[in-house]
Length: 197
Image 1 (cartoon, rainbow, N blue to C red):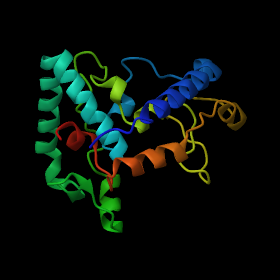
Image 2 (image 1 turned 60 degrees about the vertical axis):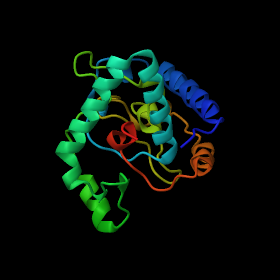
Image 3 (image 1 turned 180 degrees about the vertical axis):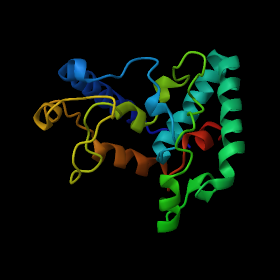
């Protein structure tokens, strides 16, 4: 599945927004290389994220084949352990959409490290190609316009609601939705499946 050309625009917008939110957050933001709390637990990714991860794996195979093989092996091991309980279709990797599937996903692989996480360095081996959830985790964000702000539980400890709101990171949901539609993919998956496609 090809990545739309405008994905680069989305990444630039989000990275600039993250840099600005990081500047405004100052010491409230605990995120640092090697902090891996957000790298544990399964989370849903869309078709655009999956396509970007696949491009990242191709790039890694060209530049660092041993690292790519390590990521691939971690993804295979991850699926060997967790796929039997996957709340969706393990052959396609698509998450189920029923209420039952969604409820099961809430408790699915919550403590499992992401296969892209290098256990020796504590860093993401495909960082430049990471999903949008990874790009926006940490600073205060709104998942949907009607939702309140959410941020990493390690960040903004002791901050007031006003201090948190002053550091909100805007997310270009509309552009992302357009690009997801351009991929032609439907449904959501998880990182481990996307890494092996």
